[in-house]
Amino acid sequence: MTQPISVLIVDDHPVVRRGLRVLLEVQDGIEVAGEAGDGATALALAAELSPDVLTELKTSNSTARALVLTSATEPASASLALRSGAAGVVYKDVDPDALVRAIRSVHDGHLLLAPEAAGSLVRNGGWNPVAGLDALTGREREVLAEIAKGRSNREIARALTVSEKTVKAHVSSVLAKLGVQDRTQAALIAVRHERG
Image (cartoon, rainbow, N blue to C red; front, top):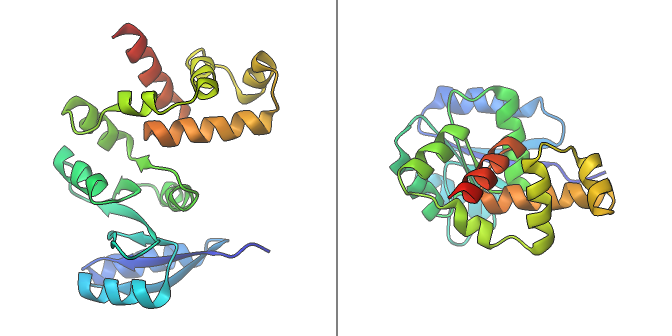
């Protein structure tokens, strides 16, 4: 049996912390390591508990991946969070199931941005998907081109004569490098880059 993802909840509002705890405690494969209401407590608990994922805070001496859950919608906030080391930014009005998926995604090593945050960053110059495109391997570029054609993993596997499992791994890597949540966003970046 795999180890559950341990999450440290950090928020200055007790009601928000409690709501997150209730949501996460009923999820398979996720356990709440602890809660903190301020930065100093969060730092101490992160050092003591070594959680896999933090909501809100990234520390320089922690291996935890930070998922920022915010109500601040201005692009500068998302940009600052990413520059500070956050692995993801989602808004507090996120669907509970989407939040759980975000925690799992960040834990698995992906960079995750709420679609609104990604769009704002691109429009305001706070994030450059072309840098992500430059980081793609040749095979990842081929996979992205197939994604842009609307092909499924099975169809991509046939077209590139590789296994579906290999395609799935490449798709995950493409999404992470581009900093997007789904294939549609990746396809949009590919199409915009071709036109630009």
